[in-house]
Amino acid sequence: MGHEIEKRDGIFEVRLFGEVSKFELLLTVAELTIKDPGKRHPDLWIIGPEVQIPYARFKGIAEGIGFAFTKPPASRRTAIVAADEFQQAQCELYQTEASALPLDIRVFLSHEDAVAWIKSPECPAAT
Image (tube, rainbow, N blue to C red; front, top):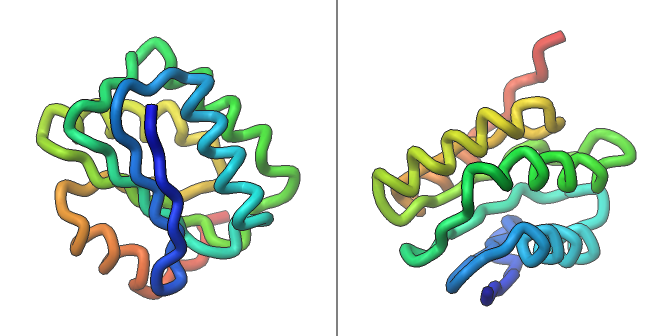
């Protein structure tokens, strides 16, 4: 697996490409956590068209990400940009598995739509 993490305009962009294992994905999350402790900035994950993460791994990935939060993150927004409709459906399944995380995760087909959502005013969390 390959990945790149770059901070642009107040957003951490994570680009994934190649084959991705659960372990490699969690290492990418750990690297992002080091670059942005407390998740003070929103993140935008751009998934390459060749990336396929088995559904059976989604629960473990969500649980692993949950361990990164010892307290609620400052920025709750995480956007995922899928390469096509099939990948979008897969990412939406992950979104469902990750619903217990203290994050607002949305899946998009367009980078522009994802950035617009990230930059839109945050609504207070429902109690």
